[in-house]
Image (cartoon, rainbow, N blue to C red; front, side, top):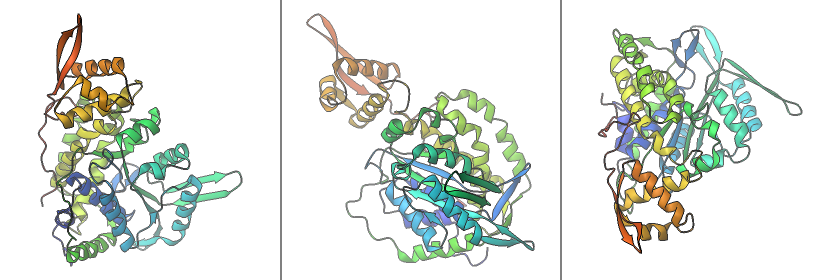
Length: 415
């Protein structure tokens, strides 16, 4: 390690943001995105006929105001601006973004083994995904889906506005959103299809801690983080494999088909089909967080698997309201309310949701949720009719994507 201030950049970031309300997993993925964006296209791993670069698409999802989604996205943006790495503004059109990237292709070069290589690195950051996709969501979803793969050359031509040619594409996304916005605005083919399957979807339900007046973080720690991020930004070259690391990766890779078949949420199948790519990208990021040596290690492979599978386990909640059912949004909202309240009555629940549902619909929703096994319902006889009375939330154990109970644990890499 040469002149690093932090033993591990991600661990130091966790120290820097300790006195904040945002969930730790939001900060972890904000940090991963920041490192990946700083690396740009200057580090890679050989992957068949192509090179694999450590760019990431990350979507932070929580209910409005619940988990302070804005802070992690804002800090990532500040870091990247401070090291003069390209960041794009909110609400672009497809043409505006590709035009900006075309210009980047002309000025961003680096030297490797005597050759001058061209790239157009850009970090797309938005505290509200709704803002980023506001102007032309269909076109932006299509172009982001295509640009995730870091093309050596990519062309976009319009009938009246000219042509953009991008060389050395390297795009990263860090967006924040809410389950209800996703349900109401992303088309069905985007959920579980090409668009969201390229994102690491990170969902949380509660704050890390409650702070009425968060203190100002230690500026000396920020300076250390910025110093090391500049060191990371200057790394250039191809990653090699530590002895035994490829065997570790290959052994896990051969479990993917079984794990895919065990998924209970079909919307996650597309993500799982790419999880091996994510593992390799994340292994690169975890390595440079602590060392200048471009090495894929068994420890980082295993840490990457754990971190990504933890994100996968909560992704269904992020998409919980998205589906074909006309009551899917209401089911999602009522599940959230029941989880928060613990117990309630039918009358209280109807009063809370009277603007969005009626007695008949709510009865059907409660029966649906009861069948899922997360609530217990007490029924009483009134006027010769059986009616729902008390409702008790019993789904205290979080379940992973395969339907098995799981215990949450800290998966921040500990090197």
